[in-house]
Image: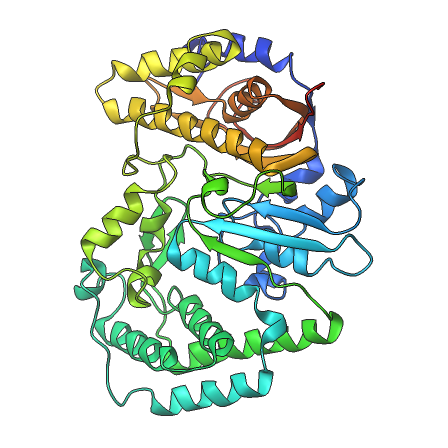
Length: 445
């Protein structure tokens, strides 16, 4: 347990917190995590524990932005596997019609999001026919194992299973019907983890002991689940819009195809400053299904992502941001963190903090450009504790994001504390996940 005395900046955080519309909202605690998604049609097609609940969009439209009517545009600039987008598709009846757009930098994760959104277009009979044909041909020729040490050594997955998965992937990619092809490929991707010797455990792949599973049976079961979900939802919903998923940098949506002042609601959860490289966490799927083909390509992807982990590497922070962190409330939040890490033995922590909040600044500025006047930006963020027992430092992401938003002209309508995280701190509540509700103001505020 770490005492408050080792974190003297907490007293300043408490003062800043008193300037914001902070409230505890326990119902959000079940919604800021992927609670229940593995039981929800379509959402369960691929296990993605880093997301939020499929029910979050519904709650927000009911409580935070209930005044929206007509056709609205929703943007998730860090859309992950498309939870916001699929939820929007299933809310078309009796509510404002939603045109949803997502942006995702990881090509495999973007593929998952795009494919999940295709459920209204799937011809179920053709899906069954193509699945049978792929499995009948499966095993005649094994595929080549990608040149990733975790696969070539057999440590994360047996070489036999790796070859079988690559073989299936090659056969699926030869299909001409794009929605069917991608849906079968997604089912194969969802089978990678259960067929492997690892489990995605937050920040890494953990070796586990699993009983033997047969490739064809595991993949076939997943395809059957996907087919059942498509049949169920196609009977329930009609005339469902297909969201757009952009492979690109969510920090700069106006540079990847989102028009200025075209969005009514932004709902997103940017990466937390937790040192986790999600490209590494999903490397088996990236390599086995051909989304990356070389170590150099994989490294470029890792370096191009949001600066929430040490591997990411992008240009210097904008001069505007550097000026901002030297004055006002933002200085009070960031200066002690930057000073403490700048002179530590681990200089990368300083670079990470500077890069992370620079990226948040850029993201908020861009979100302001995308939104129509009175549009909302709703961000799910998490605070973090780093540095160990002897030199701890707390990153109050929610306070920093709310403070940046105010400086950029947003009205902070609410900072809702959703849930506390695992406590290593005594007597304070700053280790938490929060929902920040921002409104874009007109020139008069």
